[in-house]
Amino acid sequence: MFAFAEEVCAISITGYSFIAYCPECKEQRSASCAREGLNERLENGTDVEVASVTCGHAWKLSEQERRNLKKMLKEGTL
Ligand SMILES: [Zn+2]
Image (cartoon, rainbow, N blue to C red; front, side, top):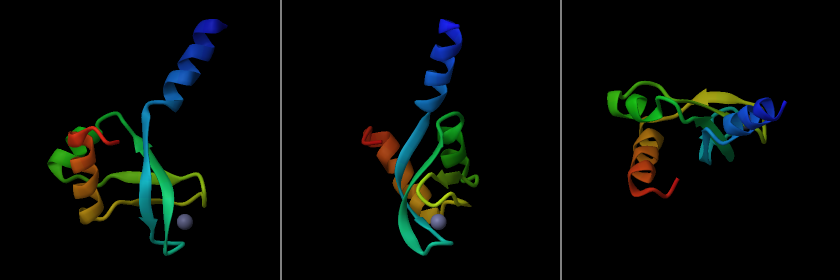
């Protein structure tokens, strides 16, 4: 039971949270994406999908945002 709770907790902290532009709301939203494989996707230039808990939308980051994210990851500010 405890092990299960710990696993749930681990899942909630395996994502990154940041501010991104939601193309549907046309506004900046608090968005998050999976931590797993993020570095590889940023390196490869593969699409990074994010989701916002604020508006419930999911979208792909723009190239500029991917670049910003990569920079933040490198600087450890994320
Ligand atoms: Zn939205």
